[in-house]
Image (cartoon, rainbow, N blue to C red; front, side, top):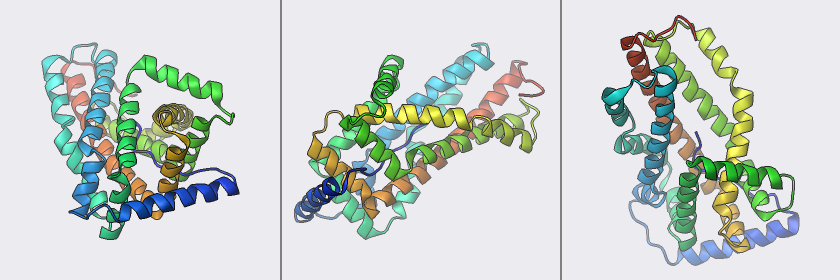
Length: 290
């Protein structure tokens, strides 16, 4: 499970100064051209929240197909499909991610919207969505991961930009934390639903046993995804993007997105565990322990 991604640069001092000058000029030019509206609604529209959740829905449905095969022997059928459709409801998911963004102060939102509403800001949002969609295809994902593995440790600008974005947004730690919490909610729902006989301590132990593997996988996925996402941008566009995510406003958006998406993923994971437990018991496939 991967979320919206924000970060910063790892340039040397000379390059950092150039980046900040570029962004300062960019921001000032925007300030005279963009008028304010209902700021939170504008932010949610500019980040294309429903398109983000549509991708999350598709990712969830793919995962659910695996659960059907592995734990229901492929017998989920029409009822399982109907249950999943209800869980992965894009409108409800979008609504669930809104509160942390709506809680941002008006000035922060206004400054965010200057960048997000610019040609570059909208191009970056489109590239994020396109790259995330591409990563749902196994062949594309494998290619992106290989590209990172082959270029790791080099001065390739895509690697440097991707690493900068990860470092500034603490993206690996945030994604791992969110994924572990979602996993906890999933196992808790299975236990609550009687599919597995697990204590709280056993659930926590099972979840934490995934942490190291999850961290390695998350870094590979994120680096491949970000390298794919920033590839069409030129050097100045990448510098401007990195400078944006270094700002207090960029950090505030990053935190709000993780808070909102994290809550949505937590709720989805528990709901999925609930219906899986129900189906397992109905089909007589529940087990005494994990």
